Image 1 (cartoon, rainbow, N blue to C red):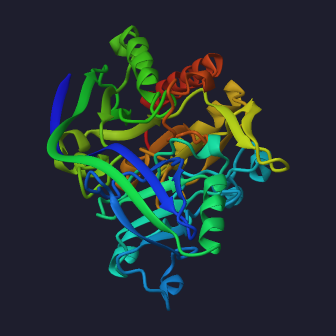
Image 2: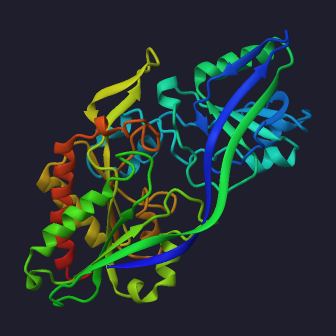
Image 3: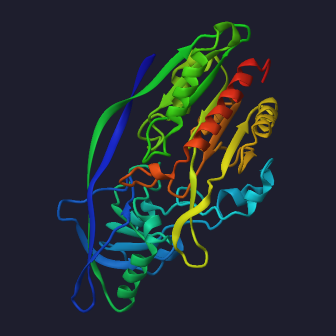
Length: 405
C-alpha cells in the first residue's frame, strides 16, 4: 500500500443564513435549503443588498436590469426526466427504465447557473431556487465540482422560493445573505494497493473509486472494493492471471482546477498508468429509490430499488462481457449503457477519457449528494448491495482472464 499526496485548495462552509426585509418594513428569516459549494464567502455580518429576479439567470435575463451591488434571485436548472430518458437509445437491457422519471439535482445538464455572469454584471451574491420539495432540496450539495467563484450563493426549496418571489412581487425587498467559509491550501492522499497475479496475461486491472462523499451511498464503492480485495486475496495467485491495482481517489467532490482528478493523477503516475489493461469502478451500491410524487409533489420512497447502470467504454469485448454477466446474475432494474457526453457516469469517466477499457456499476439516486444527519443509511438495501458486489467479483474474475481488450 502507498500514499500519494496531492495539493488541495480547500473550501469549507461553516454557517449560512438569509434574512429579508419586505416593502412594508417587516423582517423575515428565510429557511435555507443549503449553500452552493465553493460559491464564495461573506464577512461575519453578511452582505446586504436589494433583490433582483433574473429568472433563468442567462445573459438575456440580465438585459435592462441593474444588479450592481444587489443580490440576484435565479432558478436552479433541473431537467425533468434526466439522464435515463436522454440515453434511452443506448439502453442494452431494462428498456422500461427509459420511461422512468429521472429528475436529479446532481446532473450537470442543463448547464448550471453562471456565478461569473452574475458577478460580471455587478451582483454581490445569489439566491437560487430549486424546484424541489423541502425534504428533497434540504442539504443538496450541488453542483459538487464547480470552481471557487467568489459569489456567495444559497439554495432555497420551491416553497421558500415561492414565498420570496411573492414578497418581491409586492414591492422592493432587501436581503442580508451570510455564508461563512474557510479556505486553506492543504494536501490530500490518493491511496493505492496491489495484489500480484500469476502473470499469465500482460497488464493489470485497476479497481478504483473515490473516497469523498456526502453520505452512506456517496461513496460506498470503498467497502465494496475492500470486499473484492479480501476475496481475491484468498484466491490462489496462479488463478489471478493479472495483477490488481486498487486506486482510491480523494478528489471527486472538488473542481479539477483546485486539485488533480484521477485522469491528471494517472498521467502524473506513468508507471501505474502504463500497466493498466482495463479498469472497474463501483459506485453507489444498494441504493433504494426516492422520488417526488408527480401528482402531489410529496417526496418519499418509491418502493423500488434505484435504477443501476453498467457503463462500459473503449472495448467491445468488455461491453459484451458486462452484458453477459448482468444476464447471468439476473440483476434487476439494471441497464448497460454506452458512454455519454465524453463521460462514463462518475469516477469511471477519468480512466475512460484516457482510452482505458472501463466498466462501472453506478446508481444516481435523488439524494446522492444530499447531506443528512443519519447519512441516509436507511436508504441502503444490504441485500442488493451484496448482490451487486458479488456481480462485481464475477465480472472482475472474467476481466482478469480476458485475453485481449
